[in-house]
Length: 84
Image (cartoon, rainbow, N blue to C red):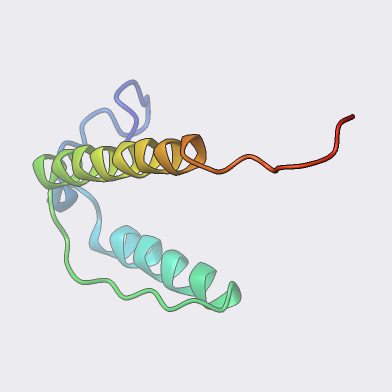
């Protein structure tokens, strides 16, 4: 939820949302992924602390992957031969 939302400023936890709305949100992600040919399974409902931890962990993994990619690119071999 956006921190400055006018409509949902009172929402702090998943439990603060109407259960029908939560179900609709879950269904959206399942349907969206089905259209893309992917499988999406809701494995639980958690609060903001878990969300922040997942984002932090994902950011670390993403940045680690970028660093490793740059290292691989930097260690490539140059082509031998003809001049331009």
